[in-house]
Length: 352
Image (cartoon, rainbow, N blue to C red; front, side):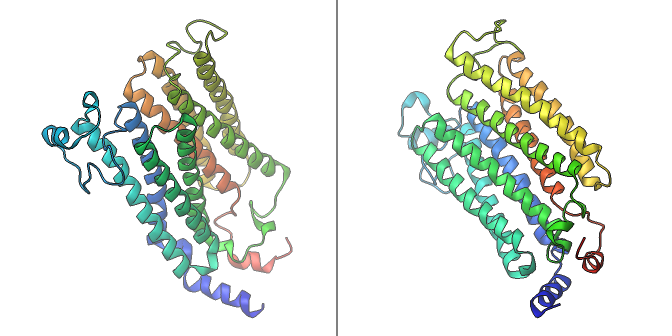
């Protein structure tokens, strides 16, 4: 063992990242916070609260917004027929505040990873990328408030927010499995031996993640193109097998993509569940993905069934995000070693 390898091993022994409860807590809160941020964004959208704060980054020119109608009417200088109401202001301000807190949490986790766990730089780099992305997301969000952007730009805004979840989950799982990251070679990843069955499950989970994300974004694009409520029945659009308008085509394209993603997600859960020698966390993620995708399908049907109620529309986006997150979790776990395998075992069998 040369000096650099010894230094890495000593650093890992003295400061094990998988035992850093503060870092793991920050990483967990960051992932939950981003999911909450997307949920709040959906609530803001379906309640028409996007203009609750007409300026950015302040709200009515203040750090803390007014919460009474009289003050709001006095400060608001936009079209009088769209004067925000207190609940609109609270929702929009909560969305911004949550985003700012997430940014601070990611910064704290990033600093701790770079200063305390240099032997596991993958976590620090993932956090750095996550911070850059969430900064871009915040900037686009500000642009959405200040101007009426094209639906495609708003879709990019949501896309980047979902990618933040990708890096957040990867950072969390890399930290949890940091025990082996500095001493286990790539041939030891995925339970130590990469066979066709494991590789097939990994590729299928990546495919499911891609289709899930595309279906999610297509739904949001349909809403922003004012095609979200054009089909008042389910699963067909008004009883017509072939859509009768451009808006109906946009809406039904989303439903078809969602159906494909449902099938692939269920296949992933089944395939992963049948894999031998898998961690309990991976087995749980496989089961959870099936439960979430069924819930998402019912929530999608609940939209036309409830005449596109606010709770159904916002819940639909939240569950779609959780489906995407479950695929990211499964993929990340498929890339990590078994948590019970000791460092000494890997060191004694470097050629395997």
